[in-house]
Image (cartoon, rainbow, N blue to C red; front, side, top):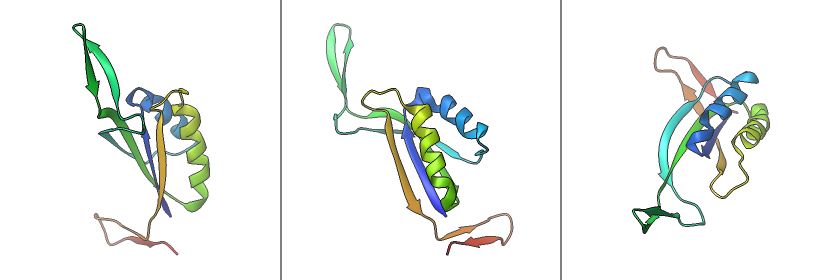
Length: 111
């Protein structure tokens, strides 16, 4: 099992959710985060003055899925979140050793 974590533009969340749901991927955790990439932030104009914004609002989608679902999810997120501009985001994949339910004593151990 793997955790797939995608950091995307907030305005692309509904597109990504719809594309994932269309392919049968419903379970996810969504968090509002702030960050910056290699561009080190952006400059905005406010009342005639330039203001540097170095922590940009992003949305993080986290999903725990089987190994066989990782590649399809990466492709779905890439297609639905891409604008072609800097700041489109990144996708990270981590191994998951154990998933333990809180409601009952169910556990899934990754092999």
